[in-house]
Amino acid sequence: MARPARRTFQRKNFMVDAARIRRLKRILHAPSESEAVRAAVERALDAEEAIGALERLRRRGSWGRRLA
Image 1 (cartoon, rainbow, N blue to C red):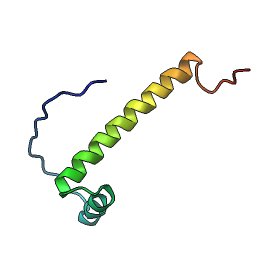
Image 2 (tube, rainbow, N blue to C red; image 1 turned 180 degrees about the vertical axis):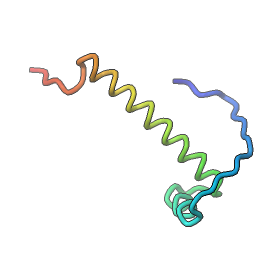
Image 3 (spheres, rainbow, N blue to C red; image 1 turned 90 degrees about the vertical axis):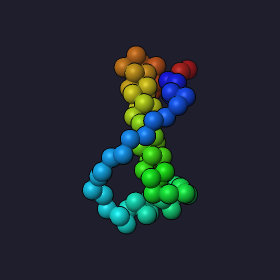
Image 4 (cartoon, rainbow, N blue to C red; image 1 turned 135 degrees about the vertical axis):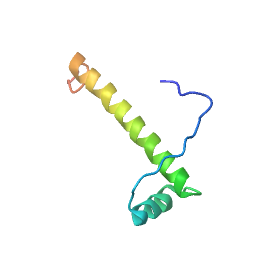
């Protein structure tokens, strides 16, 4: 699915574990904590989209079937 060409950012305040955000920043090689959080949100959304596609394939019967 296509993403919008222009992103709009809005300030949000969340209570998070600071050590986990620093770890996320390091793992993702993000230049800032904000960028790390944005990347993690994108990855989570992409993963959910992929899971949905796989579920649709499974329901359709096109997944997990041996083709002989």
